[in-house]
Length: 188
Image (cartoon, rainbow, N blue to C red; front, side, top):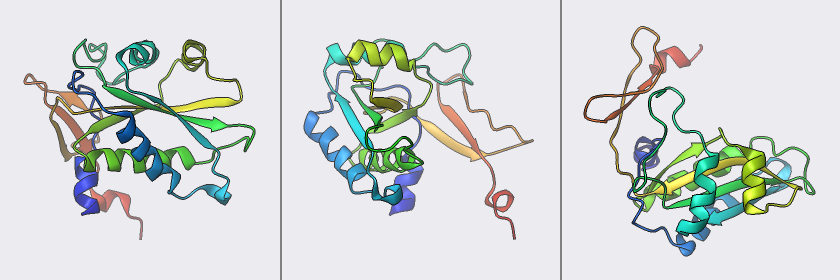
C-alpha cells in the first residue's frame, strides 16, 4: 500500500487549475505533517495555506519549475497549481529545522496522492520576494513550497541508462524520470 502511494507520488508540474483544492483538504494534509516525526520533538514548522486564485497568483511568479527542462518556463495559465502549502521554519522555536521539512513534505504529498491529488515540492523559490508579497513575518523562514492540484500530466519512471539521471519530456508531453537501479544504491 505505501509502495503504491510512493509510485504515484511523482513531481507533477501541470494541473487542472480550475479544479479547486479546499481549505479543509489542505488543513487535513498539514495535520499529517503535524503528526509526523520531528527532530528532538521541537516541531518548529508552520504552514501557510493558499487555495484562492488571488493568493495563488501572488505565489506562482516566485517559483522556478523543472530545471532540466530549459525550454519550458513552467505551467501555462489553466495548468497551474490549484493550491499551495508553504512550509516555514519558526526561528523563535529553533534556529534549524533539520530535516523536518523533508519529512513533512513527504507526509503531505503521500496524503495528497491518497486523495487523488498530486504535487511538486519546490525548493527553487524567490524567498525574499515571496515573503514580501505574502506579508510573512521575518521570524518565519520559507523552506519549501508545495504545489498541489489534480495532475494533468503523465509521469513515467524508467531505469537510468548510461548514468543519465535528467528527467525529460517526449513529443506527447509524457514526463520521463530515470531512477537508479536498487543494486546501485545498496552498499554491502
